[in-house]
Image 1 (cartoon, one colour):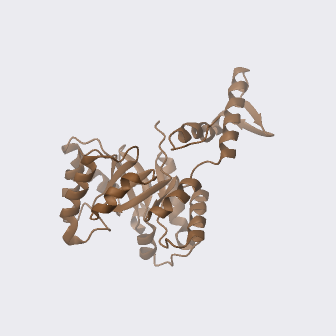
Image 2 (spheres, helix red, strand yellow):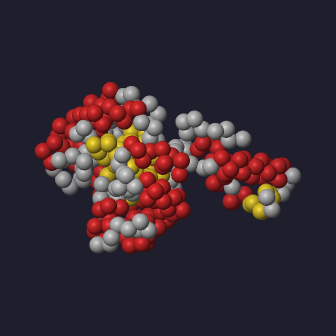
Length: 289
């Protein structure tokens, strides 16, 4: 299993050449180069060509590059998918996915283009939330679920409050489905880029809800997300001791290890044992034991 940090995932408008260039220097784990919401209808074709030129030029380093295409049922969706099917990117991000059949249609088109691209799927409508389990399991290309909380709040007719009370059920259903199918899941954006305290609280809430990272709309949001969604030094140190204790117990033929007075069984070691390889993928990561 490949472990890739996706703490900070920054949307960049595909119609903005300066933003595409700046993205090459930002410390985000992943970039979503956007052809959908961030691009006006009369600029869709030009943005597609501009983003394609940018990814072919490269220079994004270890950043995971993903392209959010327009919906498959729009005038631009099919052309977007074909254009990027064999581009040097990690995945396509599909907006407003509501059924497994939508995923399958895109997969069939990718197969026709001999593409091996992975898929990121956006959950941002009531129907998409209700069908999230079948969507997650639609194809082995599925890799990440992306919450579209702005559109979801609008569709649910709930206020987008700091506690996101009206979206809690939707958020947790998506986390459950992602975990059931072995996918990563990203929290939605925080729109007030000047509200640092509110944004920090939103990141903490995302961690508490089980998200792997957060989608972002401004470079100033990258560092707080990187910090919030990475294990702390204490957690890293403790994880190392847990793994060491378990290895020692295993060598003695025991099924249980004890660390700091707490019993650990083999079935509970998946998360601690995954912290070290996760940290090794982070820039300037502290030693993990």
